[in-house]
Length: 563
Image 1 (tube, rainbow, N blue to C red):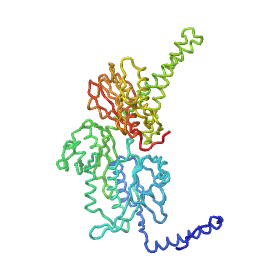
Image 2: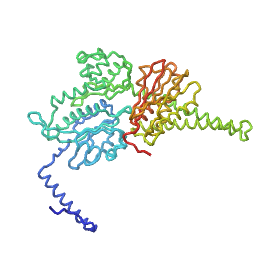
Image 3: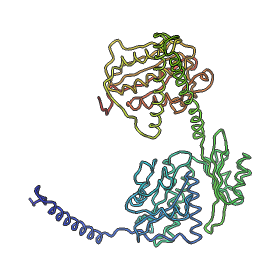
Image 4: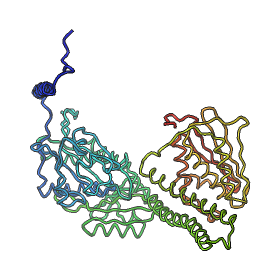
């Protein structure tokens, strides 16, 4: 056996330093030998984006990318082998000249470097939480999320097979609009568009590359599959490109619309006027239209040829109906939360003031005062629950996991306690508990969060049974899990509203539900608390008869930190 190189346990620091220096020299020698035998592909010197035609083409390109992908900013960065850095190129989309000049980063570390060296797309949903963004100083540019695709020159042989791939830079889009995140569709689309950018840039590089018919077909297919509507008009207002989404929106087919004037294709008067306005002026326009009961953010931008002359207009229709609904629900939510907070605070303030005005107990004896204290305590608990709900929802929306504090929990005792507590809040309902004849086993769960789930569901059943009736909480032992059910005799839920039940800020309106209060967070939070335990929740309901909310909880979660 060969003698293994090792440093004796009693070696001095000086001896260790000498050995480390020798190892570093050996590694350097091996690196030089490897590079001599296998020279790495070196990215060609990037073109100086200064030629007016090239600059105009890139300006139109980044604007088009930003418009199609609903991005606030778009920039191309090219690799400079003389400095080993990735340098932002002007013009960029919604980045000032100063910001472009400042975007000059190392090709060895950071977000841009990772995309460039790996030649893989990277999506960053939260730049504040990704240190690679900080390495590129992206937070200083107001970047919240990013989609980054490498620019790669592909050299092909006569059979059009790729024989060499050389990265030349990166294309970034920053900040998906309307508070959204970049999707898989955005990634596919930007990947195809990046090939077009590479084709433009590679014309000025030693390695030539032109879009192949396959690449052009890939781009056309990607545009057709976009969830957003796409419409490209000639300078005369005729449809040159329309995708399936836009065709469906206008109630036409792609073959019949192509080549036709927008006077024929676009029936909506407001949208027609908008497109005519976009054709008649330089620059981008953004407006919202309601078409077929959906809200569309409509963006139009000039399309320019290689000489920088306007050749028409690109128009994209983004369906933001859900975004606007959420904004409306948030507005309603703020108003509701203000009311929900004010109600217990008003009660607390009133009883405290009453007690302070009677320091000698001249009007209220000890029994009455203890009753007041009990109401104050109950209202404080109500405030704490509401605030905890808000904090939990905030954590969920930021994508952070809920902190689970598992412990051995007596499920039967917890059920009895929750029902007993809710009985004090209603005199119109009969609350019943139905447990198996054999005692329920102890389970491993977050006791407080399971308490919150049961309390939310019972409270919800009381709210949505305005005429009273019986509310039953039952538990069934199903072996590896317990199944809980809360059944009421209330107003029930219409089928068309079922999908909204577990959405945040969502409250069912109409009929008797107009009298029901609440923040619209209870069921959203309940669902997340159940799923945090590894369980599932669902609902069965008949309008006018009542509803049953059911959920399962494993007796022993897969991974626990039991106390």
